[in-house]
Length: 299
Ligand SMILES: [Zn+2]
Ligand SMILES: [Zn+2]
Image 1 (cartoon, rainbow, N blue to C red):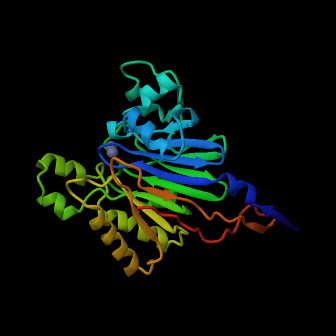
Image 2: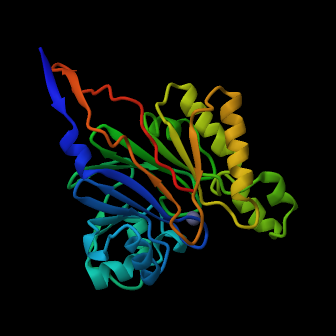
Image 3: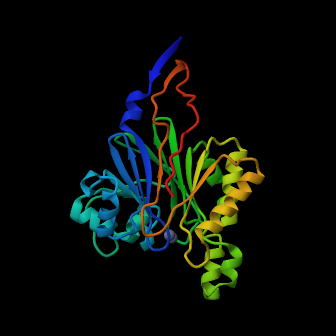
């Protein structure tokens, strides 16, 4: 027997993802889902965070938690201050929390083991391992209703495990740190070039395109990709977007929207369809066959 599911309520309270800044000068993404507000990473100053959140009428008090991908300053710079001064829960795996709490015990920190899920008010957050020169770096999947958003930044490789992790994402945020030729011919010292190009470094435009195309070729319903963590020296937004768009078109996925998350300011917003959906769902299955996303992209 079929059951009528009314999504109007869920969609009225909304699901939005906002890039607040991306790159080595500081990373942070705001997710607003139902009555829940979280950040993925907080590598910008508290003052900048307040300023950028205010663009979306969000205050620090509204934040339910901050999930950290790893301990590097461009991802975790303000974690301690936000936990201590504002009581915002900081969530990460034990190794990351240990490194961050080496100097002083943090007051409001919670453990999410790598590969595990945490339910926080209206959302579920799942972490998965990535490959980077940090103690236990992770990517995240954030689930709200039948929607999924995946984060894959700060990883030197994106192999089968990551491909499986992002399966089914409606929006995937993928690192496109550098153009390999530009990096090799650029001003960075050889040691730093080797670090960036290593398996524990950062993804190139080519690697980002490989992940996107492989995911779509496996039948992913992803309709939007954000390229993130671009190097100011070894890449440009235009170069990254053009390359990834070219690869997607060549593989027959020209309808996928590609946005580039810029450093130092909010510039991208993603939302699923705003219209209410009423769907007949077989009672034996919990799976919902939702219509294609409608993507709002401000770039
Ligand atoms: Zn890092
Ligand atoms: Zn980083």
